[in-house]
Image 1 (cartoon, one colour):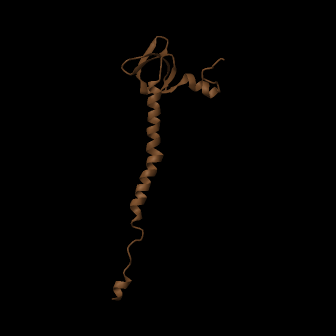
Image 2 (cartoon, helix red, strand yellow; image 1 turned 90 degrees about the horizontal axis):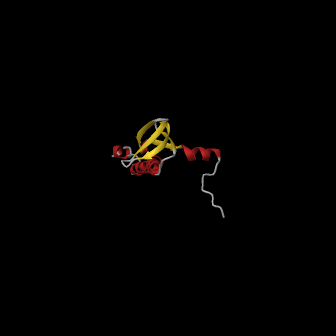
Image 3 (spheres, one colour; image 1 turned 90 degrees about the vertical axis):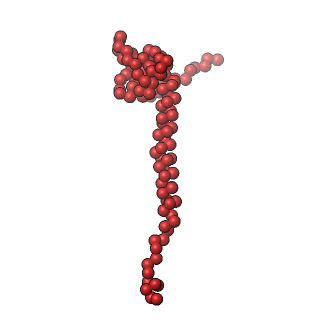
Amino acid sequence: MTNILLQAQGPMGGGMMPIFMIGMIVVMYFFMIRPQQKKAKEQKLFAEKLVAGEKVVMTSGIHGRITRTNDDGTLTIEIDRNTNIVVERQAVSMEMTNAFQKRAGIDTAPKVVA
């Protein structure tokens, strides 16, 4: 009978492990997955709003100016005189026209004259 009383008890708090794992998944979602989805959505909206005449930088680092938006979802970009390339809209990483003006502190909003 004394052997029964001396047996070790099971680990305490075993029911907390599933709750802890679910909590870790929720934390990973809010710190990793959700911001990435938000960034991808912003990039998609940015790519859809590109128009001819804007100076841009490609993800490869090539600088150029958009000369034409094509119907198939691509852009024609002039990188030098008489040198044009056709790229996907998603290949554009940054629009330079407003980006440099914002860094320099120049207001890019249209002025309303009363």
